[in-house]
Length: 185
Ligand SMILES: C[S@@+](CC[C@H](N)C(=O)[O-])C[C@H]1O[C@@H](n2cnc3c(N)ncnc32)[C@H](O)[C@@H]1O
Image (cartoon, rainbow, N blue to C red; front, side, top):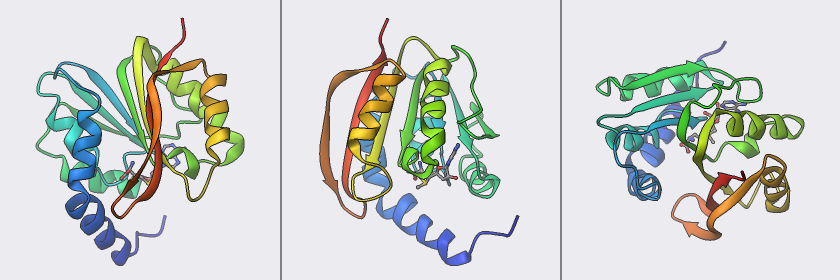
């Protein structure tokens, strides 16, 4: 596997980890974690979001999953001081941990997954949640996937909104669609 371009790493460090830190921090606050939960972040990339999740889980655990070992290695390095965090290389289209997590965070990932693997990916996300577990998800509206497709996929995986989903415009990230869902009984 070729190494990541240095410029790409620097851009992520600047935009995701530094300038975007407040956006990720507020996003994680949406979950209202008590600190003891088991959380999975799917497509954690270099850990811009994961570090805020780990910070909010002093007595819980965080599993960082990414299909790309190179970004995951950067996340691992950044989050080295959070002992309750594990790093797993895997494709969510084929990876699941049955009933293991209280919450799953998916930030700007689903649109990156090939269209024919998205239903399986959401199926594995659903299968990995404990009963009553929550899915916090945000996707860009400008590229990758129509929101109608996303809503159909969520419905197909038996997710219903926990609170009304919404659109917002974020600095650096543009317009996004986000919300929190739970599995229908
Ligand atoms: C646009 S980046 C977002 C990274 C991070 N969530 C953030 O918001 O900063 C998308 C990430 O999803 C990962 N990804 C793409 N397809 C995946 C899959 N099928 N399973 C797991 N991770 C995947 C990519 O490797 C990449 O790190």
